[in-house]
Image (cartoon, rainbow, N blue to C red; front, side, top):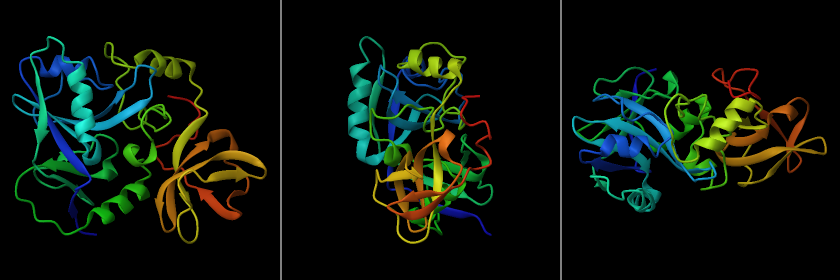
Length: 268
């Protein structure tokens, strides 16, 4: 299959500039920003102090500035949130109107490699790019790979990043210094037992409504998140995946992507 390229109107950019840009972001985000090289892309998040997901983001290094690739519908809220933490830091946080492109099914020149999983291809910011696929094509591919869309699948301040597989998708640097929500995140990692994880759900027909209960017999096994005909993301109990699963009486199947280890109840 030939390489596909789509523009993502659901994503937008924030530019963080100034002498303190990298240390400023490094102290806030789950990812190491101080060692970010020009042209390098990393995946991370801004958490609430109790350690729940507020904003998912990609972090892209430019010569002087740092670009944040964020959900377009939440860009203003994220700019406001980051600005709260500026204090005396010599930084500017502002919208950047360059478009966001994604390419998959093969390497694309000028695209930074998606750090989450090789099958997710790469991303590019700005420039003249000829597209041959739609954002819907990209979302279908992402769901096939099994990577959650945290903006769609994790309402703000409800989900822990490890439940959304940030630990398996290179979204948390456990070796760096402090970041907002680190205490809870590190404790979940140390304890090693993760009861819930996001995994793809397969079924026949249209997607169940967001939040629909997944049952294993009479036991609750999870809930349906965002989806489309035939497939959705789900937050599931990893100890209740064996047996007949149903949603509203309809049979469903959890598909474990290859990048999620069998011992997925642990954070390792």
